[in-house]
Image 1 (tube, rainbow, N blue to C red):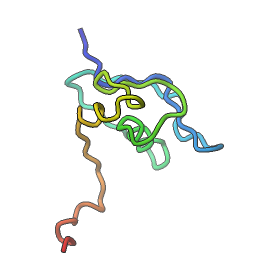
Image 2 (spheres, rainbow, N blue to C red):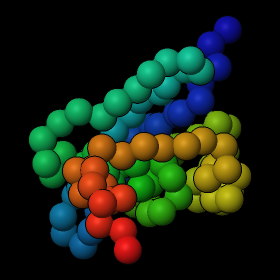
Image 3 (spheres, rainbow, N blue to C red):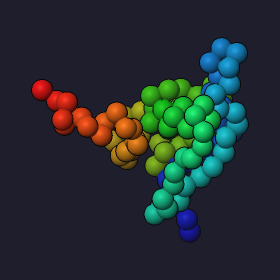
Image 4 (cartoon, rainbow, N blue to C red):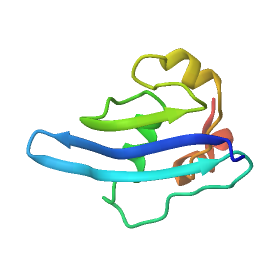
Length: 97
């Protein structure tokens, strides 16, 4: 039996009249590698912020490691790690005082 570690169903995020994420659904099984690919403005970062409990969704449902990011924020954040590809961090040690 597959263990779904991320489950997203009809996830939507609106900022006033702008829809950043529109009814996105997907799941990730334990042991799978998963990545978001797409152009700027596609909603990748917005989805990650919702999954990591940094941003609340407008509608839809999601579970991360069987926790609800809306009501179990601390449990969600303790249950996984995330690495962003951000060129601004590449030379961080060189710029540190």
